[in-house]
Length: 238
Image 1 (tube, rainbow, N blue to C red):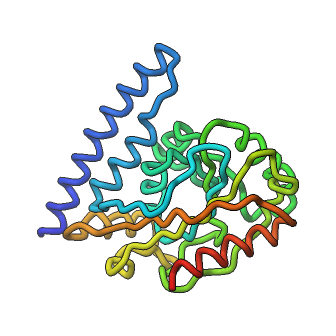
Image 2: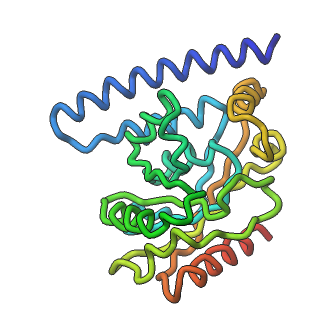
């Protein structure tokens, strides 16, 4: 019973936050001003589902590719709220009602991860996105993990950094939900709707720590870049 009430209350807050953000976003667009409201909305959603964000380090806000470990869809809310990042996401997400549209408002780059024959086009798409004045985040594990094991990094999309645009940096980020990780990590074949219900029904708050690690200049090929970022994230977990 308590979980159902909690879910209903959070859904109501999400609807209010969405309507307010859409209204304000529309007003900003009317005057052709850059709108902060998509990322502010995502940050608000993180707080509504119980996250209290702790930022360690200095997040870069442009001319940067963020490479982060991946635990849950909550990661997207946290990073967008912290540094205004756009994201690389699987192409299937574009077709999800409302969610896909909201993703486009936040400049999401949709890629078909299973389409190995189209990697060159995806790399070109990512290179175009890197010219825009906001960070781009990639979750190179390619899936969510358990928060304990750091999965191998897939380097295909990092071909966009070979060679890297002038002035671009790589910033590894370690995401940590602390003691709440087992309850929040999205592992295995759990349907997305079930995971969302579980998060919305969860009691209490949790601290989500974003470790923005020291950025580095991308050098070498895509595999070398992925290996360096993964090593730094793994070291931050010790």
